Image (tube, rainbow, N blue to C red; front, side, top):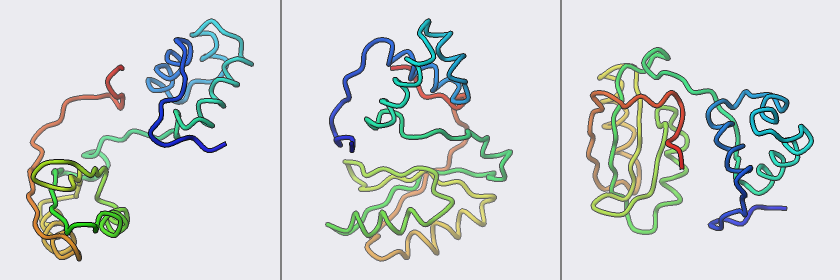
Length: 158
């Protein structure tokens, strides 16, 4: 079964608590998860499986400290792109490893990218030589990130 895009999956309070526990620690065992929620392991397994199947849980990942990982400079790069070129630009941007996140947005710019690079020279090369020269990119604006709010790898609670 393929999850329907744009529609919320039906979730009860136990599902929401399960998701919150996994967001806090994606390495929890099913036994530990079941214990925290006061449900059986079988119920934990079936709920997690359903949440995967319904597209609520889309995967698990390691959260890294960008600076300790070798990315000493971060920035938001705002791009204006030619009309109707979103899919082509999206594909090109997905191939750039320094892009950690991207979103199609409303407002003065069409696309906002969170980029991380080892140093200022590498960031300059990324913006001037790889992003601004990309077909369908008409202009850009770069904002350096001076400091980031701590997240401990967790998204805000819903």
